[in-house]
Length: 236
Ligand code: HEM
Image (cartoon, helix red, strand yellow):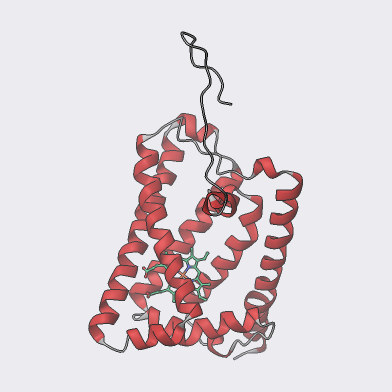
């Protein structure tokens, strides 16, 4: 490999991830501390509901399954390789992942079309929203492209990408496998770091707060208080 290629790999797969994670934690924490009320998805559901539903639901079901798959194969790569040992199990995993990838893509494209075509939604869409949507589109297209063009990604991700991600976490970056990966896969990995970088500035921060406290806080009972014969007032 030429010196220039090595230099680019160092920049994209060593420097970029650390910069991205540093900015992610710093800005997420300070934004939550100083401007906690901006932690929101700024939903536009009340402006238009139908297209919103048909885009948002497939997008979220698809992306949640796909990202869970990425995390599981990163955490327990050996078990994933064991599962893929049998062709039928490998096909089940790969076809399910591809179906969820396509579901994500359909949902995302439909959400983007909604923001382009519904005038009320266009007005409330910022430049940063478009940056995030285009980054997501690039990420999902390159992910589905990787799955189609370089088969059995679940196996080689577990064997080659997971060790790289662990090496980053352990502050001992190892580019042995990454350096040999095709440009599309490299693009997909860089896209992930770019998304992590813009995450804390964007409405994606809603992922960090959505209804998380409901999972551990005590159930709350809201009672409506009104005197007999009066119209409903404020909850107490
Ligand atoms: C923001 C983070 C990421 C998002 C949103 C994302 C999204 C996706 C999507 C939508 C797919 C298509 C799923 C399918 O059709 O099988 C995919 C596949 C894939 N992604 Fe990612 N990805 C992310 C990060 C990463 C990272 C960091 C790596 C590697 C270091 C990676 C490696 C792969 C591989 C190898 C596949 C193909 C899986 C297969 O063939 O089953 N992804 N990704």
